[in-house]
Image (cartoon, rainbow, N blue to C red):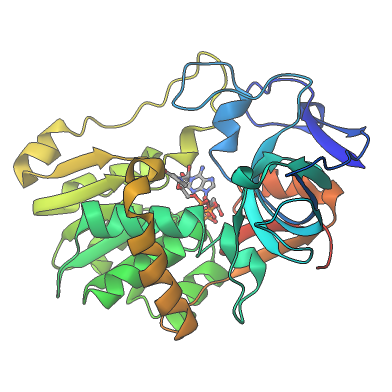
Amino acid sequence: QQQLILHERPNGLPDDNTFQFKEVAVGEPKENQLLLKTLYVSVDPYMRGRMSDGPSYIEPFQVGAPLNGGIVSQVVESRSESFEKGDIVTGQLDFQAYHVVEPKQVRKVDTSGLSPSTALGPLGMPGLTAYFGMMHIGEPKEGETVVISGAAGAVGQVAGQLAKQAGAHVIGIVGSKEKADYITKTLGFEGAVEYKQGNVYKQLKAACPNGIDVYFENVGGEISDAVWPLLNTFARVPVCGAISSYNLKAGEKDIGIRVQQYLIKARAKLQGFLVADYASHYKEAYQVLGNGISKGAIKYEETIHEGFHAIPDAFLGLFSGQNIGKQLIKVADA
Ligand code: NDP
């Protein structure tokens, strides 16, 4: 079977030298173990941080060792009483086509009518991130204006719909016309700002005549610099990510405007968070997201690449805005 390893740490944007495919044996499950076949692999922006060796909230990938991330698999052999052959499961696993795992390394996915891939998107880590960032930190209220950067991505698409359900007026910042159409026409956001068209401040000001009450921050950099002057009194800013800075080269600095004056003027609250901080509330989030999705009240998009070999390109595609909704790789059929 194929395994994907970190061949070399990238300096700046990863390239072909970053990744290497390796042939490894498929293990045999022992008593109380499972043999899994990978169906879907998730590529996520935070993986870029793990490719570097700096201090972080999460351990770096090791050179020569497999990359690892969210995977949905099917049980092909079970030697555990808690799982049956055919069960669909998800977990944080090495990037390879088969795994031998202990039952505690995975959780069962309830597929009731939905693709199992949703366990990596709206009903997985990105959905939970959107939920906690928006509902626990952003706390949008009826009639408020909510702006989301990276709005057509895995987290952004869910975050915006949750804000809409709370009665907010939602504006998304996106990198293309196709994404602008997706968030306004399919998801029903009130407006879209295409940052590649230039003058984000002017576009945002026009789209948000009443200022900005919640800014859900996914990208950082110049795009967000256009947001700070528009924050309203007591605005909330959940800082979820800053993807525009993830591929800076060694020594390169992310220099922008100083935000303090704007935060003071608006008495705004800016709070970084990690989805894992909310582990004790996951049940609440799964319930809200699961209900919304099964009723069609929360819509989602997936960009699915075919085959294990597509993982590196799909990962790089996150940084060129290639995906609408969740970026995934389909490795095998169930
Ligand atoms: P997305 O599905 O949103 O994919 C990334 C998107 O970011 C791209 O499609 C692209 O869209 C946009 N982008 C890429 N490079 C840039 C850039 N230089 N400037 C502006 N936009 C850019 O990813 P996710 O939804 O999975 O993640 C969104 C953010 O949330 C990331 O910053 C991620 O790190 C963060 N995150 C944080 C978590 C937490 O616990 N705090 C958990 C999960 C995610 P476009 O075409 O619009 O440019």
